[in-house]
Length: 159
Image (tube, rainbow, N blue to C red; front, side):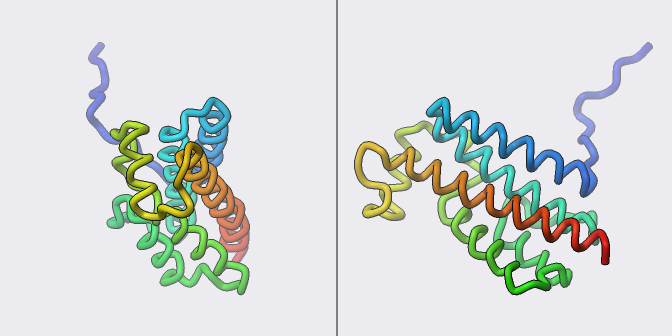
């Protein structure tokens, strides 16, 4: 019996992305409690990305955006899925995430991320707790994207 090739990519549908967004949110929360701030930041961004991919995946299974959350969010809009005035909240939260989150956070040390945060907003992220504040801000915005994404997901499935 031959082993399956490990280099074949996994296939993901809209439901898989949706479920993964909740799991990643929980992971990010645990990392935040454990004071693993950079890891929490990275996973929070992944959680938001998963939810946006879940929403897009209801209408289109191709993804060219890579890890650009703003572009994924714009695509949700172009697909006609932002129909409620409250859906603007997801756009605002994605902008907040994208201001801090980068896909390459997974490679960064705490010192690098701390310096990055101070560079982008010295007033908000200065002091001993700047990294923690950044992680909490990112987690909270991602949690909001997921919560609003669930509303959009369920509404779009019934339309």
